[in-house]
Image (tube, rainbow, N blue to C red):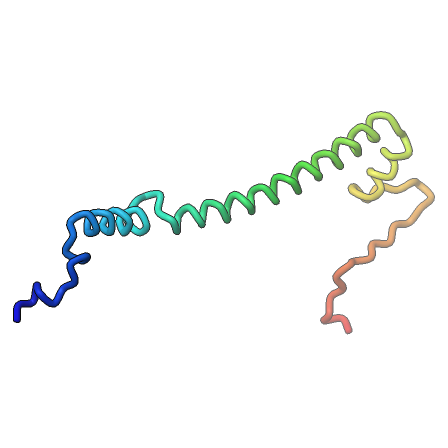
Length: 104
């Protein structure tokens, strides 16, 4: 028996072989293969989430900046919180949110 007689006819078809080779090439060897496309989509979703977060933060900071330009009470609050400034007759006590566990 010849080895070629054991292979089904549809596997010897040149069109089937050409299409199969093309599909394998596109799926695995092309620079824009399916795995790369899935990775790019995942990155795009992460970037869209990051973009939304940054836009929200920009909007919040813009409101705060506008308040700093117009409201003296906001300027004082900002100076006290961010730069630990105080009035002459005050004392500042800083309470850490993450206490050092070694002091216990």
